[in-house]
Amino acid sequence: DTAVSQTPKYLVTQMGNDKSIKCEQNLGHDTMYWYKQDSKKFLKIMFSYNNKELIINETVPNRFSPKSPDKAHLNLHINSLELGDSAVYFCASSQKDSFFTNYGYTFGSGTRLTVV
Amino acid sequence: AQSVTQLGSHVSVSEGALVLLRCNYSSSVPPYLFWYVQYPNQGLQLLLKYTTGATLVKGINGFEAEFKKSETSFHLTKPSAHMSDAAEYFCAVSLTGANNLFFGTGTRLTVIP
Image (cartoon, rainbow over the protein chains, first blue to last red):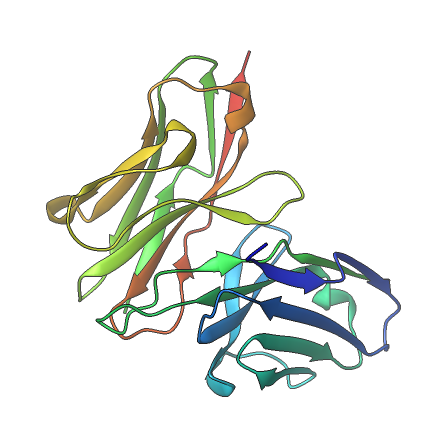
């Protein structure tokens, strides 16, 4: 099936650990994203990559490092996990129209990260 | 700058009643507008989107929204609520040349039997 898939779906880990979340899309989109949804359901962008190039890097601790080996993959690595990192992380991808505007956003099903 | 405001963090309706979820946007350029739904413990699913053309947009599950430039609004409606519509609904905006979606804070819809 064509989709944005991310793994794992659930991740429980201790403070101080390093973990990665993987994301893959087979929609042929050029742009991929990581969004964070906090406990109040607020969604905020963290990173955006276009054709493997970082184009958005919001105010995110440098413990978070995205990696895009190719335009179909965008992984998120988190070092030294803290309690406040607990959230749901969504991967997404999009395509541009003739106005260079992103509109074909498709989201993965999310990774619920719990830091204990 | 651009922003999205969703009026009402919680909306309750009776089953069979009209659903109206409000969204207003702020943008200096013509926006692309979206409504997403998130069911409990699930990801985001696109309900509908407005890019250009017809201002009344029909989406999945009987939802529709109308882009009103004069009111800077993109309210989501459904004539008759079903129990299965209970979820969190997010309005979002994307701008020409921009590289991401800006989300509203969400509205939780409760459907009362």
